[in-house]
Length: 392
Picture 1 (cartoon, rainbow, N blue to C red):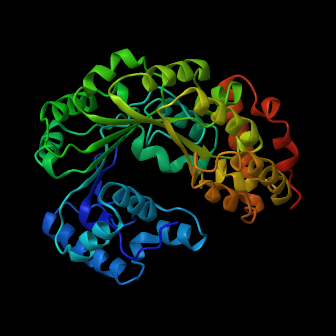
Picture 2: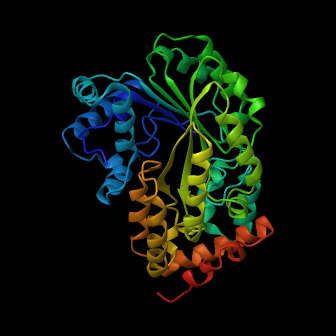
């Protein structure tokens, strides 16, 4: 894991949330500040603290992850900058910078999405709006946080125009959702960015759920230096249950995108949850096979895990997770270069179990999702039953 002091995000990044909130980092707890002068003052202060090896109070997420020896957004950004500029230039670039200059854009144009992943909500998927209302009506009060987001939230055309004026400054554009490939404003942004034919063209990374026919959105990326990340959390029926869509269709689209001439690299983004813990060895064996038949497949990022208590893998007994660790370690050993930061997942498997109140919530949420899907994750992963037992 990268251990350089400082972080590129405070002065170099603009992150736009699906409901329009603007930050320099989506994991920062610093409130969105509309006044640009105040915002820049806070950015500079946080930049200086991080450069001095201090942890600002708004950077709790990265502090916690790095304290556990786990990849954070800060260290991941360091890796990206070193990959583009080299280590010496990256260190010098960050140390000398004193004022905000946007190089790193992480943008979400809306929460418009066509699927209902088990670990998601209406904050990031409009398809969850109806289900979140049903969950609250069913007495699942821990979903109260979704109330402000139970509508389709879109970026304004004006905001997009403002962002495009900075296009020549970008070295990296990360586009997330919602589902970006079905959002018209996102597709317009991609078309216009490609037509600018910038001298130092930024790398454009699109994170997709892979459900939309590539022929309907890839033409919008002409002229871009493009990488595409597919979100895959389960293989076959487990994937169907977790994401609420057809895994077979997503896999077909993955292979189509990988063969497209404008796509430089394709990756898999994996989120570790309660629902795929016992599926890990099978899933990553299939990822290995997919790599062997897909030359552009660069890496499978495994540094994310669901921290919300109702879908967290830490609801499972430590004993059961340690057995999984033994099995999946053997798979990672076959091609460790493919599995980006797989050590994170192994360390999460070792963390203490959640308290009984959280485990009970996990049982309720799993039951709600089983009813919503029309088939049971317990039938696909029988080990979940005993690993969610009440006894601690």
